[in-house]
Image 1 (cartoon, rainbow, N blue to C red):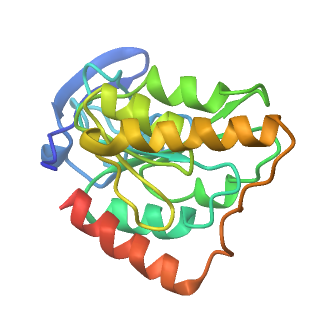
Image 2: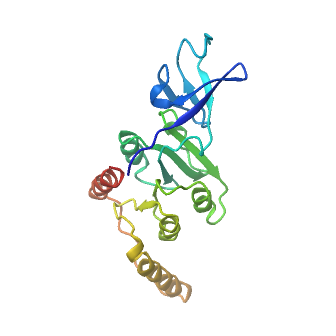
Image 3: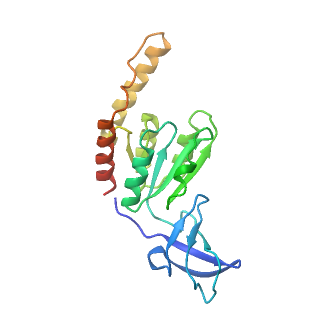
Length: 210
């Protein structure tokens, strides 16, 4: 996936001072957990702020590709963040309020969206923010199908890349297994997550984001 430039509008003392590609800013910058871009510089538009200047942007202004992580009980959150940052992606963790993701939010380019614990709340929060250049990490085949329908990429936590050519068959298997369970039958659950799974995930995500 190709990385696009991120454009920001810099505000100081409530007025627009400067607009530029992040690569051309006058000092180091970061995106904090509130989705604000912080510019660390001694001179912006002729002013000398004593603290970082807050740069506001919307998705239409910031076209940098995003890796969304369906973070509820996700075993590869740390790995996904590390790889995404290596490839210049920003990261959005989507989870319900019971998940403690604050430890990740001190990293540059990582933010979180907290949703209710309602069924599919995280799925819809991701889909409404998704753009074709984005990618999603998820254990949910249903969400993966919606992601592919939006033209974005999806990968499972064990490194399985989802494809439009096969997602219908995978959805059919999921529905068949659900019918068996509703009728009182039993289906095999997933195997325990292993370090081999982690390595497969890291390799596949690296390849996907390259």
